[in-house]
Image (cartoon, rainbow, N blue to C red; front, side, top):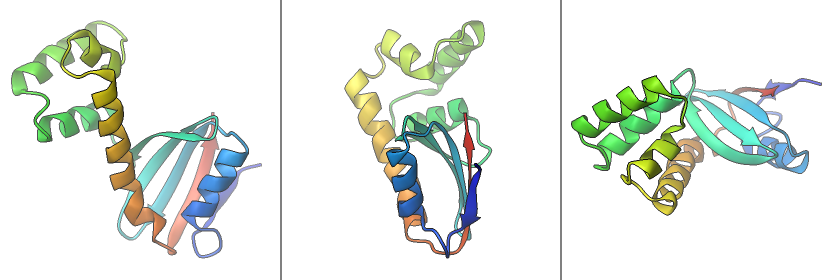
Length: 132
């Protein structure tokens, strides 16, 4: 059963609650007047959020660069390493000792909250969920 609808009828908090209760894994696409985002769920838990259509690697590296965790040289080195293997950015950052696991988790959680807060308040727009 596809999950799709209008935010006037079914708000973002209710959608999140449903996905959590049913332990769904997949991507929730939310389109509002202020932004279009993709929210990733794994077994009902939010594990990521991005502006719609954006590359996760580029988005996370951009955040880390803006907040001062990565220099231009760090980014170049990470991009070369990532191009040569399929290790996740989180694992590469740990391996390079650029960020610890706790720092990465805190930064990602703050970013997800920043992406989602404005969307939680909107009652105009549409959504659809694509299950993995």
